[in-house]
Length: 331
Image (tube, rainbow, N blue to C red; front, side, top):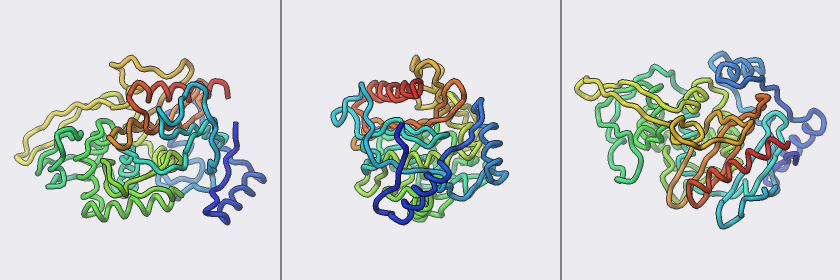
């Protein structure tokens, strides 16, 4: 295992982190078994508030600066970047170009969810407006209609599980007043948690030249998301059925399934024996390729974050994830 070190562009902060590592280590104390309720209890025990909101825990995180290649993953031609982090020991088991700026696709929605979770209650009502219109035929939408009403809880399920771009826009407008303001909130949060190679220009992740992140920054973002029991509950769900209301007040019945094939009960895509995928976020666009970042655990309940970005196809994406997860068994 390779211990993580600081970024050169933030030398003073990095020096502090390295000294802290030397003196105190960078460990954690997640319990087993790993579940949303256990996660909430453990985070509360580490100083987080009852509603699972917390200050940035950058002091508990470390930074990767070097590649740690994985046998079986063909570099450059089949993947943009990857990163596997042992959360308890704060060490890197594998990495490749983890600090390289790349298009995030719908992994963007992790930050959209994080900002919403920090600023909203789950029973708040969203009334969908014009922001849910104008998407192309091949861009994933619920589809939501102008005047539809749903709770934030429902909206987060639709966005995180089904990756609905229109609902990401609806959340942004509800929280930020408009999409531009919400993107400022996203970028402010990114800076706060140390995701300094990230810039968001939309809440859904469709390709834009100035919409970029890194595998390492996504690790930081997911690390913040899993402080919320609601987030863990949503991303660990295979299927979700609910009823919301259209502009005429009539019921709209909707069932969505997770886009993460590790989570889907109707798909034969399994993590290596001894590894359980808790959940995370997929993403696919023309510029980003196929992407997936997940929280997973070993048989003892120890947590890891595994991120694979920019593969050429879905089969390669899951093959690369399995290759990374297999390293956990030998760590």
